[in-house]
Image (cartoon, rainbow, N blue to C red; front, top):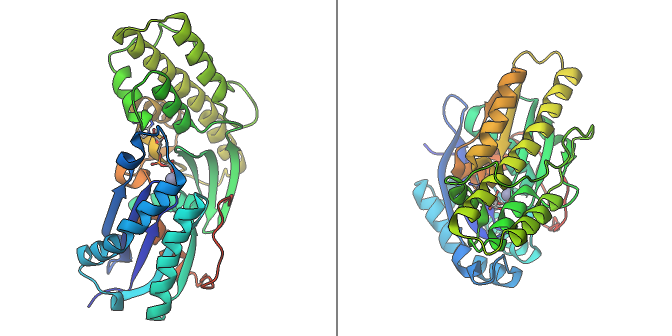
Length: 345
Ligand code: KG4
Ligand code: ZN
């Protein structure tokens, strides 16, 4: 006997994704299928995501992806308990494509619909992969978001800090673009930094020592540009040194912010004996950033939970899982729930 399963659909940016999530007999969350089609190639020539191209590409592949996810899960529509789709925040065209598909399946099969906030998907991923209990602290670092969240419970999110300008992933992407390393920039910068000297260029450590838990990366981006101009023409070694110096500055800034957040958690939730710092978002894949976070977590007595990369970056398993928690809590959404391009948690 199968199911009941939740079908999840994610189309908020440049990945088209479908997944099937359920629970095993012991009640643990189980990913039965998780398929992603990245549009990186479609957007590569433009150096960033083009909304119109993204929406059309979602239309082209989504039906096949949903079928592929169900077949990978060895399930049919009859095994579904509900259908979940990202309805924000993100690019409106993509949000409409994904959620209309989910609504149509829900309508045709007479299933409940779950309108999921993409950020909630990221925020709950540590519970999907590691069965983390509420509450926990979450650092979300992606191309669009850089936030510190206290996750108190389902739907109970306190934002302790956010970026006042660029997201960290965006800073990586812009640094890569400036140094002509290609898109997406994060992995390219990390790779170039491997053979670089992180002390060659003196770059600012944004927000270090600030009492508020916010982030800022646009000053660092400008400092990278000025350093590149001063050192021009850049040979391969200079590019590597600049990448390594940028990464070290970003990691120091993130480490400083997180150290403060961990101290605040201790102060506000002294009853939590085994506190957890979870990380999510594509930038969590970066080993220098991760090492800085691990150092601060160890020093403050926090366990650190970093989901596998495939679940850190955009995917539909996290949407299906958020849907599962909402379904179990009876928090269903009307079929005509609007999409929300801007939707803070
Ligand atoms: O979470 P994600 O897949 O998508 C959203 O933005 O929601 O994150 C993508 C971001 C991009 O900015 C990408 O450059 C960055 O994560 N990224 C990295 C690395 N891998 C991906 N940044 C630094 N180092 C990496 N290894
Ligand atoms: Zn994301």
